[in-house]
Length: 624
Image (cartoon, rainbow, N blue to C red; front, side):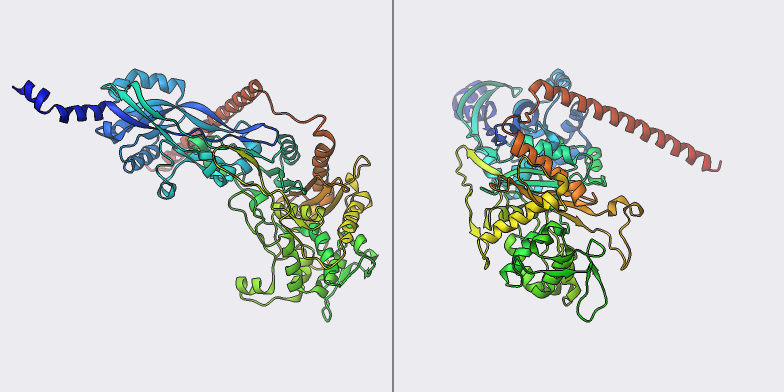
């Protein structure tokens, strides 16, 4: 009678329950879009990895299960806490336990799998950055979705996906890189193993995107900054393409994908050189003499100067009625100086006098036309706007009135004036482009379901009261800087370079004293700047180079700029720098993994020795 009741009367009920137990709907995450450089070099790849998953509706005691899995998958207490938090919000959707399960972990789990009902190993695609440090500050990285992100994202859009763009291009273009998820309807056995596939809706892959970056130029830029803190940004002034974007020191973004260890993250966070800090995008520095070409054109715009106007430079400038001397960098001065000479020899006194006549408000209004004091609009998150000061800015910030002497400091890119390397490169590109503005961008094109528009034509022009030929005359003055001025050390007859050197004071010097590099801590040395473009007659590349605490711009930053110009103008087409082969990359990664393991082992040994020494000293100090 009982058999008859179950098989006949309750047939529909138990058939439905049985189907629900053996038939599962599994989300099929889309393949994340690939990221390439302008020449097709892949910068962000997708690689299949084994991922451990837990289905909460099939596990009676998730916490106990995770504790038993901890030694297999190297789960920490924090890992377990995070997984339990995600399980409480999952609504029976599978939750990731471990990304990138190793062969050894897979073997250990397979031996014990019958004891872990509801835990499975799936093959999933995860992100990989083959050139790790080289593009970290521009590509960024993806990482596991955290609590804050889970509250704002579309749950259906991220079904089956554990990763989300955190910073850089991965974050900015998250919507088009992500794609659309699909699903699979599968039949499983009593242990949760998939027996057969019943139905499927394929996912839609995310857009592949091609960036304007050039692998070879990026490599040259990083090599030039190797061992030094600084940033380089190079832009094509014709279309706004960002050709190189480097912040040094950098870091390997790959560990962030599956979850970086506390020790490794602590090392990056506490590093005095701040490798996680994007100096090109967020670093704000006194731009020093790099601004003089832009400011000089402002003098013409306001009718305060022309190309023939001269001033006398005795080596200093004093405000009327004030004995304080604002020194020129050259003791004894430069004598009679016109606008071209002021650029060539970077004459501070010329700009002291010009800024005094112009006044801070007009200087502010003019320099903002070159993008200072505001974001450039580049397609990267978290860009900083720098500071182009004004009386209103100081009142709002410090609740104090503007002082005349502060205008003099601002006139040579010091004082309250702060700019990012990206802003200086952008203003230089506008000058090379004869005042036309194009928003700098990294995205060159995109291929996939989503449509993306890229602006590569001028979207504005500086409102300028002078003659169109003034832009060309400023090009000539900047070229003279390289031929016979402060940048003559990088002159070459092979092509024409226009440039400007800059040295930004970090530590103030008392009146009447001289800058003595040997007597100052290295972290208080001057910042070295160089900005320029080439070739002069047909600008193809405009750039800004900053070396933190590097010293003089002409000796330190300008040669770096020359190396980038040489590659772009002379070498790129005939002998481009190519990425390593797949086998070479594997060898490099194996060596890096070995080096890291060796460092960690030595560090563990030192920490253990220190611990034992501390315990011994404590015992010796404890009275019997």
